[in-house]
Image (cartoon, rainbow, N blue to C red; front, side):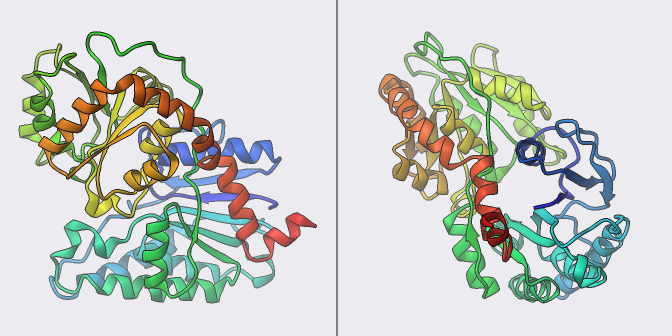
Length: 404
């Protein structure tokens, strides 16, 4: 690989794993003496380990412009792919070479076809290889499934992916869970390779016993898919535990619409029960919160996280944390396979998750020892170095060149 170009329309500010993915890629490529360029959203406010992203992209990948209840998939596909081409055309491609790699860590069907058309305008001899990390099976997402013609999105994914492979046969499609690979391979009709979660959290100090008030921590976006709406019931169900947990809850959301009753509930809770952390956090502040956790609570919806990975889960597992997740999630499956210190709630309900938190508190010494014993292996398997080793070896033509 001569040069890595990261093109991420989701990279805009601190918080989440978009910043971490890009920052860790910069560090890993620096170790390999490979230069990196990053192209982010136009109002991007972050720097990735010394690399300042070029502001290029206009829209979030979940932006929609389609308004007609029947043909909205067509309206979105047409308008947003052309908008994405217009954004990509702002990039200076004069220095691109065939030995470069274009990495798209977050795309859906409303950008994928735009990439295919944009690449076809670059002369074939200087056209870089392409890596697309597939994260979102959009036609299976809860907020989409109730709409007319939502199944068209799968057809658009297939059409766009095949067009991209025509523009650049040296294109690799990958996903970071077995379940997502299987689902996308069925949709696209072309291979989708499983990759690890690219992460490298800093080492954190050892914690002693859980003490009088175990710290149960919820990190990430205030989303129903992440079970944020279940937190009040979970917390109420744990008030009488001995020892009684202190819940640390990050409230991160770009749009609090619909969350007002929940936010009001949190404001009314005594500080001895709930401590809230408002807004996106820097990577340093985020890892401080992770380090302080005795139990990491991930009440994720199985309908979504039954296929999707969780960066918070991968980091917590690699750091030897005790974790609570619901049955039916990728995290539950990975916990069993890797022997992690995890309690799996029997269902995605506040009551079941509260019972799982209670078990995690009661059995904490045993679970903590189990988590620590499994952490090193999990960390090596799910790491940024492993991710890029597998990516480079899987790009058509790239692995052979690297071996030579």
